[in-house]
Structures are given as C-alpha cells and as structure tokens.
Image (cartoon, rainbow, N blue to C red; front, side, top):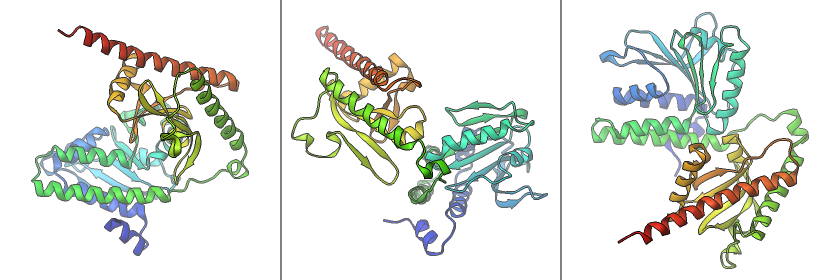
Length: 373
C-alpha cells in the first residue's frame, strides 16, 4: 500500500526533498522534547535547550545571499546550533558546505541527511571541499562515522535517512510520552520512511563521461566474474564449501549465476559451509555502501550462524562482520596490484581461515558437552 505523503508528492508534483523536510520538521516539533534532544545530541548538536525546547525554521534565506538552509535549529536562547540539509538526489550547491559552516557558531553542526548509497561519496566530497579552504584545511575525518571535526569545535556529519529515522524511532519507543502520542509519531515516522523508500527507487546518480563511454567498467566486471567463479570452483574442489543438494539447486542463487534488481548487481552462489547456508560472490550494492571490497560472504540467519559470527568478531575484530537484512556480511578483501590468480588464492586463504574458526567453534561445543556431569 502506498503512503499518504508519497501519494500527495506524486499527485501534486511536490518536490520529494521539500516534502520530506516538511514532514521531518513536523515530527520533530510534535515529539517529546527529551526525545528530540537525545536524537540531536547523538549527532553532536548541543545547546541551551531550557524549558522551552528549541525552534526549527524551514527554508530560511541567509543574509547576504549565502544560501537557503533546509532546516535551521536554534536553542532556547535563540542561538543557532545546527543546520540540517536533507537530500535525495539533489547535488550540493555552491554554498555547501563552506558558507554554511561559516554561518555556524562555535560547536555548531552541519548535518546532511541523504540516502544510504550516497553517504560515502558525499562525505568524501564534503571533506575534500573543506580541505581546499584555508578556514577548514585542518579537518579531522572519521570515515566510519561519516563525521568531520573542524576548527572552533564545529562538526559536519553525513547520515542516512534510514539511520536518522531509526534513531528517532528508538528514542521515541523509550520516551515517557503517552501511548497514543507515541503511536501517532510512530505512524508519522513510518510514512516518512515510505517516502524515502519511494525516492530511493527513483534515485539517479549523474554519469561521468567515462562511464557513458564504458571506460574501465567492462574489464572490472569481467575480472570480478572470473575471480568469483574460480574462488567458488576451487573452494568446492578443496572441500572448503559444498554445493547445495540437487533438490535445492533447482533455482535461486543456489547455482552460480548473476542477479540484478533496481539497485544492485550481484554474481555468486549459495553454498553449504560448515553446516551453514552462505552466499559467496560479487555484490555491487554492498561494495558501494561499504567501500571496502567487491567480494563478500553473506551468512544467512540460522541457529549456528550467531555463534559463528560472534567468534569471527572475537578473532578478527568487530569490523570483520557487518550486519545486513539477510544476516551478516563478511568482507573478502582484495589487495591492489595483484594478478587474478593471486587474488583467488588470497580469497581462498581467507575462506580457509573462516572454516578454521567454524571448526574451532564446533570443537569447543563438543568439549563443553563432554564436560557436562
């Protein structure tokens, strides 16, 4: 079922970014003050909130032609504390981020809310722009949290609509607002989430001239396909993984194949690995979002998997496993300037290490059973 605000956006041809910003401010103004205060603090926004909360101002033109901020946030003392720039597919203006940062007071925050797939690229572009300015050349970048710390205690953050709405819903669920008010705000958040999902499906990234000509793209895809195929075939031959039974191999990703939808291209196969169902392959969407490697292991949700991924994190660190809607993702890193055959051996070596971790877990479990009285 379509959302109400999504229907209004289409029927009246309202800009989705403006509509989303309007709805977002409505939700923030209608929510419990403590909820919004905790939400903003989680992004580094501080101030004198007092007993009157704070004020949100929409689309206010700055003096001297210095742009129009989507949302201006002032504290109880009337001091500007943050600007919010909400985007779907719109590019940065010539005022962003430098002139907006100039307008912020000490310890002010410039927060960009964009679709998840844009966070990494936009963050890097904003940080690079800051480095080009004498005022912000000393930027300290935290790529993991998409945060830039700037002179005078200023801060620039890039987050996704998904993350922002998830945090808001989480703080709302723990608030002391009346149940009926919580239900209404929860419904508002869900409506905005659906609008974001609709915008995500229509998002178009500008193509570069090289991309249009196909420069460099086909060889990379061809190499990744070859590497994936070799890794899976050799892992099956070396008994690191097993193919699905014939009954399970009739469809889906249980045979080596390419799959595509509106947002992603992947090439890989479902396999059995130490008693678990996994998928190994090239996954473009995850590659773009995580920015680490094109090859991934997806460990599906199943009883044995929880213990396995926890053990991988204990052995290799918390960043060795990433959460995903299908379960957990484990990156299969690729080193630069390596020949294809060497890359295959590197990936197989990593999968062998994961197999050893799974076997150690099994051995530890058996030993624990043997010690039971």
